[in-house]
Structure formats: structure tokens, C-alpha cells
Amino acid sequence: MSRNDQSDLGRRGFLAGATAVAAATAVPTLATRAAAAAPDAAANRPNILVILTDDQPLHTEWATPNTLSWLVDGGVEFRQGHVATPLCAPSRSSIFSGRHARHHGVRDNSSPYNLDQSTTVQRHLQQAGYRTGLFGKYLNAWSNKDIPPHFDEWLLSAPVTYNDGTYNDNGTVRTIDGYSTSVIRDRALRFLDKSATDHRPWFAFVAPKAPHGPNTPEPKYADTPVPAWNGRPSVTEEDRGDKPEYIRNATRTLADGRTVRRNQLRTLLSVDDAVKALHDKLATLGQLDNTLVFYLGDNGYSWSDHGWGAKSVPYRPAVEVPFYVSWPAGGLGSGTVDDRLAANIDIAPTILDAAGLAPSPLHDGQSLLGTARRDHLLIEWWHRNPGDNPHTWSSYKSPTEQYIEYYALHTDSAGQEVGTGELQFREYYDLVNDPYQLTNLLHGATPADERRLGIPALAAQLAADRAA
Image (cartoon, rainbow, N blue to C red; front, side, top):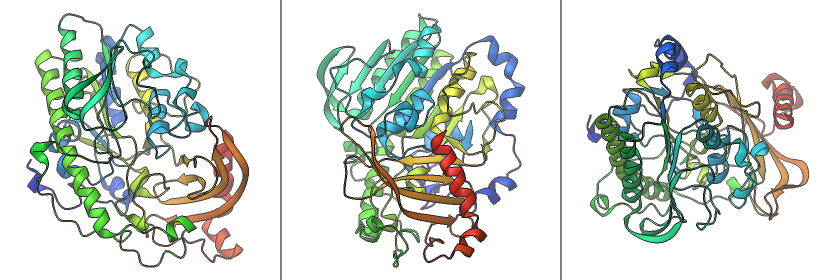
């Protein structure tokens, strides 16, 4: 499959009617395929590989053909993959803990030490006899001099530097020459190589910086042409009068979106090379079949959608991410689509399930190897420090609708939630008929309109989710 075979929006494109497409996809789900192979999987604990990119949105498939060949054509694609908080450190903490940010405590990028390390999947796996390794980015604001708990080996990268970066290399802080994605790849490969003589199962968390800004491509890809892109309706939206103030005042243009997209795609070409190298190493070691692999972004990114050029917003480009899973020995290796709502809080429960370990009662997520199906997700984001925009928000999101509330809340210097909690603004989108979220149906809505839209019930459910 060549990159030239991909369309502007990627091989699978933007799903305007996610539920309609999913309903028409008559293929086995991850749960049914895993159940069929459960006896074999239980007999031999799988290795676990989590590949986490930084700020990778949907519609980047052009840059990742090797990843698609391995984990989509040869695995399971969750076309409704989400993050519970569209921000780096909270999202990563949700992956490690299986919990919402309101429960694991890392609400912003300044408070990584709030994470209760006793709840992390790496702790559970290490105590169960797994060899554990972390290679790349860990948690924002984590001191590069500090050891990441419950990892036997690590190459912890400092803040985003693409070339000749500073790393904590198993306790020694030093500069390592080279392009960061390649440096991280090579250390992960060395970790895998040790399994030729160390026969314990292993857990590897591989987290390149790409495609996070400044999106510096590897020299060999610096001038690689990328497919043309003319934006989408949310990028060229002219009237944002129904949106919150910070979106009404947003100024990012189509040209800005094109620049970010181009640079992100170019940096992802190196990630794709690294994924291929990991695949080939597992094949050489004879471990490809019994390795449970996850690939996802820690959050999406807006390519000037609604004038916004970052994450942190409740809209689809920021909260929906590529989400792929493969485990041939567990029955997850022949290219299927799972239409369930999936989120990063589901990764830890799935890992423990696959490893035959007891689920944590603290988990907010659920194992994707089972048959559990949710009808909506709680997605949240906290503004750091008082003032400015956007306000802290929470959202009820299903495949067909999204309800959003903004509050007078923020995080203080300790990462704790403070403020009056006063409701500031609301949005509601019909995702079936308005997939690009152009029309906030609560703008100018009457009480009768709100009842017709079902807003009282949605607001009550959102309040219950936040209180749970």
C-alpha cells in the first residue's frame, strides 16, 4: 500500500455518520474474536506494547502505511477512539491508570506528581513478573532527573526537542545525538532484544514526541511533499456567533492549518518507520503473535477547525484519535473494525484482562476484550490558572450527539480544582446531521427546544458522570 494511494483525508476519511457506517460493517468485533481464542491466550501471557504519539489527530493515515498494514489490516481499528481529556499529561495518566483525570488527579500539564503510582498498569505488571520499559515522553513537568516509577528500564526524554535531546537514561541524564524518534526507537529495540535470553513477558511503553510542535521532521523527510488539503467545513466556518467567546475570537486560518498538517505528517513518517522496525524485531524474535499492541494519540489536534489551532477543546478533531489494537494469539489479527466507543481509560483494564490479572475497582474504563458497550463518554478539560479562555468544560459524547458545559473552574498551582463552578456556556451538536459541529443547537434555544432536544436528561447524566 503506497502513500499515494491514500486520499487527502486519509484512507478511511472523516466519518460523517459514524454509527451508520459502523452498523453497516458486518465484521466480528474485537470481543468476539478474543473470546474465540481465549484458551490459547490464557495459556501464555502476552507481551504488551503501547505506542503513543503526541498530538496525532485523525486523518493522518497517509503518513503511516506501515502502521496501518500491521495494526489495522492485521488488527482491529476502533473508529470511535477517544481520549478522556484532550491534553498530554492527563491523557497519559489515564492510559497508565485506567481512570478519568478527576480521579487520577493529573488535571493539567503542571501536576504529574499527583498521579497515584500504586494504581498504574506498570505497577500491576511489574508485580506480576513482567519486565517493564518506558522509552520517550512520560508526563509533562516530570523532572528529567526523577525515575519513572515501576519501570525496570527507561529512556525518558526531556521537553520537546527533536534533535540532540537530553534524556534520563536509566538514571543518568545525558545528551544523545540524533533525531528523537530514531533514538527512542533504537532503545526500544534493545529492550525487545533482551527477550531472546530473558523469557519473562514484557511491557514496553514507546512514546515518540511526534507529531507535537514544533513538528520538526527528520532531515530525510524535511521536504517530502504531502497531499493537498483544502480544509473541511469546520475550518472555513464563517459564522461562529453560536460558539463560546474563545472560539468566536479564534484567528487560525486555513493556511495555518495546512502548515501544521504538513509538518505533522512529515514527522509521522519517522514514527511509521519506527513502528515497522518494532514489527520486524518482534517477527525476528518470534513474538509477533503473542504481543498485544496498542497504537493511539494522546489527544487529537485542530487544524484551524473553528479558528482554533491546538487541542484542549471539546470538538471532534481534539478528542477523537487513531486507536488500533493487534494481538494475533488473542484472535485480533485479521483486519476488523470495532464500532464501540473506546477511550484511553480502557487500555489499562484491557491489559490486565489480557495478562490474566484481576481488574482494579478504581478503573473508570472497561476491558475491550469483553462485550461491554457504553452509550456515551465523559470527556473533560481543566483550564490552568484563573482567567483567560477557554473555561473548564465537561462533555457528554455519544456517536450521535454531544452536549458540552463550561464552568468557572480552573486548576491552581498544585493542580487542584478551584472556583465557583458556575455554569458559563453550553453547546449541543447533532453529530449525525452536523458532523463538523457547525451549529450549536442551544444558541437561542427556547425551553421547549431544549426539551425536544433532550437537554434536561443530558445535563442530568453529565452531572451524574462528574459526581461519580
